[in-house]
Length: 130
Image (cartoon, rainbow, N blue to C red; front, side, top):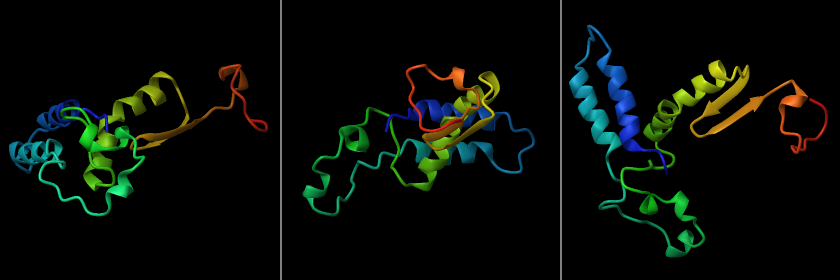
């Protein structure tokens, strides 16, 4: 819900603008991507189900409360792809700058394993041996 659509689009645009001798119309693809990225699914939407289903839903989990040009619909295939593009820089940082060998991420969930105990925060509690 907090992904910035402007940052995402600029990442995609800068990458596509570097394609040389493309066998597709880069400007058309960028036009279509812009339409998808900046589409606001909260406008003119039809809400199905009972209002009671929304009781207790944190505002941070609803596009109705996301900031301007923020967030994507949870579960959309494009949202998953955009999340992976958006956080690619994080992957590169963790793998190549921090040197994490055992790291994986899908959209906004990630995991990492380390073998050296003393790298962990001393207050971190864990079960068993690493």
